[in-house]
Amino acid sequence: MPAVSNRGKAMPDSPIRKLSPLAEKAKARGIKVYHLNIGQPDLPTPPQALKAIQMIDRTTIEYSPSEGIRSFREKLVHYYNRYKIEVEADDIIITTGGSEAVTFAFMSCLDPGDEIIVPEPAYANYEAFAIVAGAVIKSIAANIEEGFALPPLEEFEKLLTPKTMGLMICNPTNPTGYLYTREEMNKIRDLVKKYDLYLFSDEVYREFCYTGSPYISAFHLDGIEQNVVLIDSVSKRYSECGLRIGALITKNKEVRRNVLKFCQARLSPPLIGQIAAEASLDADPEYMLNNYNEYVNRRKFLIDGLNRIDGVYSPIPMGAFYTVARLPVDDADDFCAWMLSEFQYNNQTLFLAPASGFYTLPDKGKDEVRIAYVLKKEDLAICLKILEEALREYPGRKIKIAEEEAIRASLS
Image (cartoon, rainbow, N blue to C red; front, side):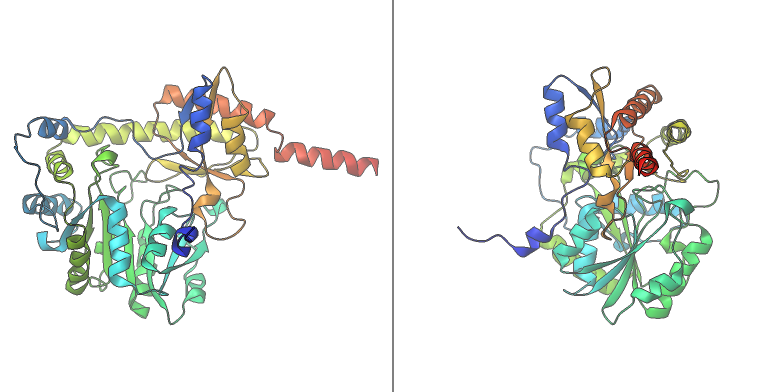
């Protein structure tokens, strides 16, 4: 039997999906599973997108240009201008989701062995995309006690080597919901400028910023215009995960030339997805406002509820629709699997994402989970009750362990 590739062996399992077989088995046993494990919004797709799909009258579903439909890219220019992101249509390349945008960015800017510094916890697939490109992730851990704020720049500089070529950030952040401040973004700019690094900036959650402070894009940072590669997607803002439409945006012409070669090799991004995504740009302002307000309400309800559960702590996320919460358990991976395979409350259970999968650093996130508040408040209330009961029953609860150790110590 021929051997499989070492690259494939090095690819990490998705922390979001690796427990899916246990969830399916639970459903087969008749247990209702609440999915807080994945960033699939439950809010409706804009009617403009659905109507555009219904009105397609083509007799052939043809290839689109490799860089994406021109009219869509021109329309995106106006969308970005609303956020004071000054770009031209030729700066925008449409991709098959944000995932392809990151992959093509890495493959176009990095050689095998080149290194990227990434604050963690971070979207797990960044590591996978780096492996595809032959690049190496160098991680620096943010701290839950500090709300996952940007670590000191001195810690970044300790990781720099001759092979360091870039930084990867997500703002607002998946999985923590942290939103970088102007001061933090300026520090990132200074580091990028000082060492002439690429700044790969994933900004797919820009619509969902809750602090009242202005959203700071990498394109708002002066002096590094040629260093920035911005990643975007329609999946989250328009509840269009299945369209698989993203974008790679850069003013660096040499990077764009490289990216386009990869785009030509995969022929074209999805035509129907682009038609729907272009129509989505005509969504009523009330559509985004309603979605925004819904996430604000869900966020408050969930975070308040989590922090009322004994032993649970979650900082207040300032963006996106995720939080990373610390649980009183010895191993969150085991706890999440146990909830799906052995636990039920009123014939219901939860599917959470173990946070260890969002770190490449060993032993990080062992007692943390990522929770996506993509369900309505009535369902979140049920989820909070299920979590509270699960923690009460879980054999590996830290408080129980501490109590047992104290009893043993008193008897010795």
